[in-house]
Amino acid sequence: MYFPVSYHPVPKYLLFTSFISLLHCAFSVAQHRSYLRLIDQEYTYLSTDIYIQLFISLVVGLYSATAFSGDFKKIRSDCEDEPETWDTFGNCPSFYSFEHRGKPMSASFIGFTQSEE
Image (tube, rainbow, N blue to C red):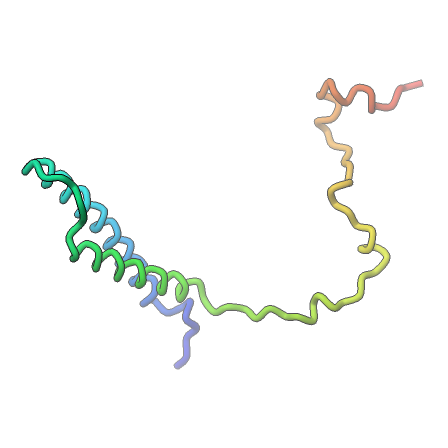
């Protein structure tokens, strides 16, 4: 039976596991630095196992986040070729002005209100 990738539970568990592994890497780095301070050594580099764990958990996390998001949709190139109508040709949303209920409360809009005669 075929299930889409987004419904499969394995990427969700891998994402959770890689997140926990990244938290463990952060804790290991903090513990390593405090250990070096205790023995009065200068901090020069991390141990190799921390780098390996960090790289593997990062790769697994990126893969599982991509698989967790589901299948990608194809970009249709024919959508851009649709002819524009006269209604959408001059459509400039940045020049719209709206009559809203907050307009009378603002002092800067007093000159724009209609005078009652």
